[in-house]
Image 1: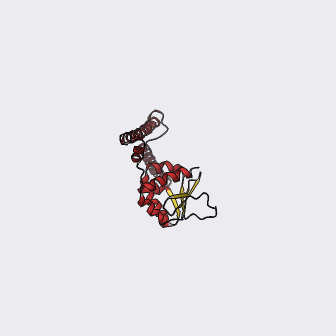
Image 2: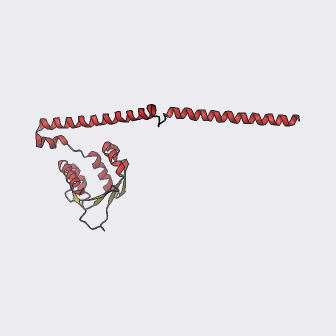
Image 3: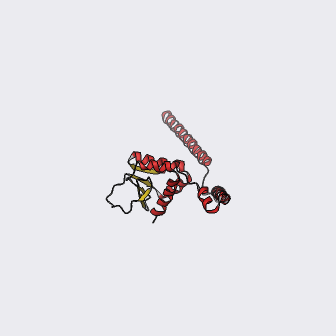
Length: 198
């Protein structure tokens, strides 16, 4: 159910970028598994460099590469494609994995080109600009919400403590401990002096 739209989307990108399909042709017949704990997506590289569903293949077939992704990291991957590989645990054929990694970084979806085929050039430019505006607005709203929550929990309903306050408290605890230790040593000396005088 997830495999078909994913394969169609990636193949659409590969068809627009012949160099990318050419890189994958070197790995024709190999199978990759994307394991996201909640589901697995298995694809095979076709002789034309495009993806094919490997779901129909027998379960005994071996995956040359397994990409393990924690579901919680999916948002981080979408947010920062440059660091996406750092969230993925890769097992298997190093050359095939390296090719997939490079393609995940280099392959871009030209949304404007696709929209221009449907709506025309001017509308496509405006739609993409509006989409970027919505994304930027969402990011700003998210940042403001974080700042407001932090201020509320630090100032109005103190459930959090500022790092400077924690450091100052730790320094005061250390100073008090040292003062108590000095006081104990003085008391011990005074007791020894009292005993020697008697």
